[in-house]
Amino acid sequence: MSDDLDPRLARLRDLAPPLPFAAPEAVRRRGEQRARRQASVAAVAVVAVTGLAVGLGSAVLQPSPPAPPVAAPSDTASPDTALTDSPDTVPSDWLLTVDDLGPGPWRPWPGPEWEDPRPPGWPPPECLATTGSPARTGLAHAGWSIGTVAERRAVPWVHQVVERYRPGEAAAAFAVFRAGVGRCAGGDVIPGLTYAVVDDGFTGDESLLVRVTQTPADGSEVGVTYVGVVRVGDAVVTVRSYDPELGGADPEFLRRLAVTASARIAGD
Image 1 (cartoon, rainbow, N blue to C red):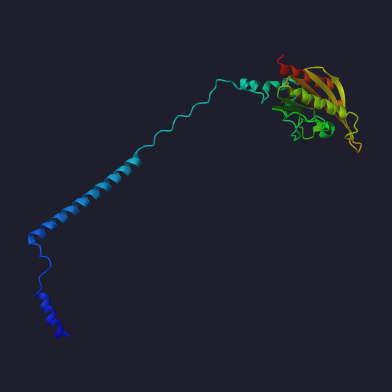
Image 2: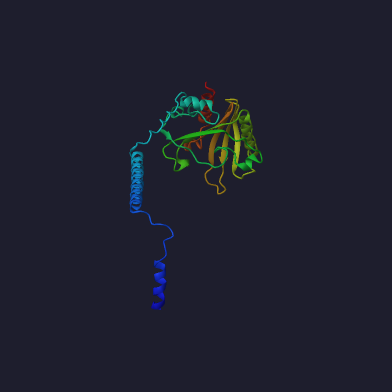
């Protein structure tokens, strides 16, 4: 095998290269040019990285712009004016105060909680039959008691509810109350529950003073309360009171409170 290779290699040594080799000076010049290009690329890369770092540092150190100032709320309208002008609210001065109640250690009592659309003291749905009542647009209520009301039959108390309606609908709501009183007057609809009109038209645009009597089926103590309902324009006021020493309540006391509430709403 080695005898065959020697003649073949000898023939290759005798062949001339396809292209002439470059002179040593040309080779050296190309090497210097390549070195200079590599140095330039490296310098550009260093500048680019340095600029990016400087930019990021500036962004971090630069304080964020201050938040725009919050506009202060306008105080051009007083709370009382807003309450008076809005049909969806009841002005606070439409409610009775402790001074209106007269002598006695009266103290605030929020009054009962109720889920029925109508205020406490109004006839229940069975008495109202299918008569619908307009939806009120505003509601406020307040109450007072002498002592604690943990046992409501033991202490005197007063409760007031004021409702506002859209123009013209307060009269329809008052008509619902009047019809309910008439329907349950005899105690036939709800056994043991009767309504009796004590006075009619004594104040406001329309008014009723009603005695409500509840007679338990077991023959225990009969409960008596008085309810005064007054319409003044687009407002309907319901006032109730109870006094155990008077067998339930004093109708004259309640009438006076209803007249005072009516005058308060009318601005008299």
